Image (cartoon, helix red, strand yellow):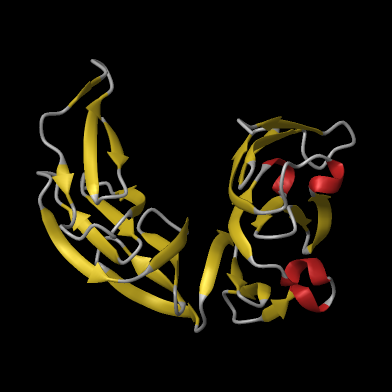
Length: 231
């Protein structure tokens, strides 16, 4: 089955084999402003939905079982049951099995997060911080002002490159804790305001405020930017 979320807190269930919609949909909330950020399935066939104002768990019988008020901005998987969650006022590790906050990683508003190996990538209004599980913190904006930009999305691509979509300075590639690549309107992006980003092998899909951009072979000498726009 394929679960499709709407901005009105409805989840529609499509049956993949027949390409038809299941007769029952899930209403997560009667409040119009509660949109869905992500759905996290677990091995017991339950699903935990992350919303812009809540975390809600639905049983295998599609009945809501748990509703936790939390303004979710972004998330990143740590283990099958533990997720790093960015909120309007902090960053926490949340266990979708016990439905509890395990730890608070950062006590400040966070716009995007990512976890890799033993390091948390935390995007704040001041810029990008790295924090290890041992507690060591480094602010990348101290050495390079590019990392002081407000970041909308953090994703990992091929060759261990961490890609950052920013709200005003295009797309930044980070490798080994240092600047690896930088794409802006000066080298082909349709806009420097990048709201979303998705990695796809040797391609980066970027959603800007002026259309969708695709970067092929990002970070390499033969990279190319393709712009899709109705403008």
